[in-house]
Length: 156
Image (tube, rainbow, N blue to C red; front, side):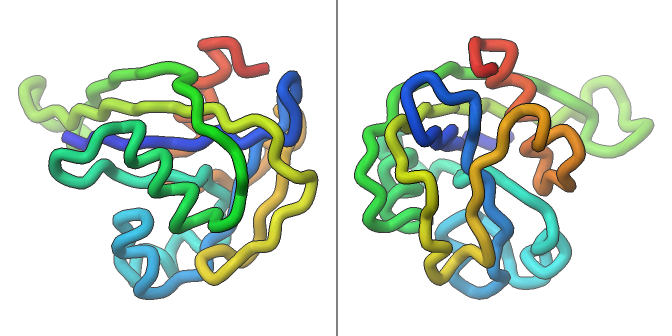
């Protein structure tokens, strides 16, 4: 089971563009995003949302604020709950019906970010992408599924 928070950072209130980044693999991602160095190297060319798994006893709101502080320091936006989504799927292909993994996702909108953001120590690159631009991107960590969930709950 995973409990995770995701930030949907937008440059303006009505913008369909969302911030995605390519990570800079390293030890900092273990605490900032639950990624060990080896996995970080495997996904470094993919794009992902600012996100993290919740720590024990951490509220989703606290996790969203922690993402801002650790992954996007200095970004002055306020996370607002967008939606909560739940999904379950087999842990491995062909797994027995009872062998499922459960994800509970907390998605937060953050409006009013500047059009350009400095990558900082955790990211190689940060960019805003429109829905059309996202369709051809290599998306890491299943974050394409998160974007689809967000779209189904009012994100253009």
